[in-house]
Image (cartoon, rainbow, N blue to C red):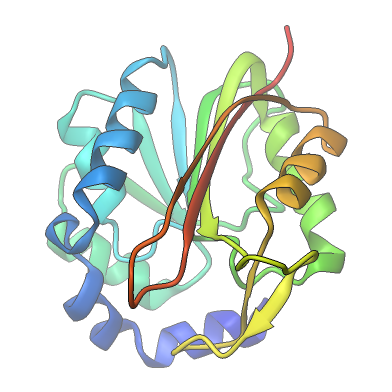
Length: 202
């Protein structure tokens, strides 16, 4: 993770300029995240919030949300661009919240750089932070047809992974979560997208 944090830190200004506004997101993703978050009642964390655009969107929608990121340069940009929400330093594997305290966790493309050998403990940590009935919404790059496991690829910032939806689903179940639904989108010229909604059983 230190390598990932350093890579994003050196390009934080460039990244924020290109994709650090909600207008840069796919409208279908915006609708999907908003519908999910509006169904939650209680505190929510945007884990790996980056320059803060998703945190700000949900804050303006009335969601009780904080943005958490391990990259100080991203947090500085988020605070400057979006003065409404709270942003703080933190990592997916150590959110500094009591277990069972959160109504929701958003991880929108924030786990794409997590190595497959580490994804299980990270998901378990996120699951433990949720209260019974609390939900995780995970957005990620989906594997292409015929790929049977997590596949590394050269992301513009640092190496990332795309996952077959059934494989990621199995990892979430192994972390103690129950799958509520999956969503996929494939368009010409862009990498396939997937999202999984999962809850901590009550």
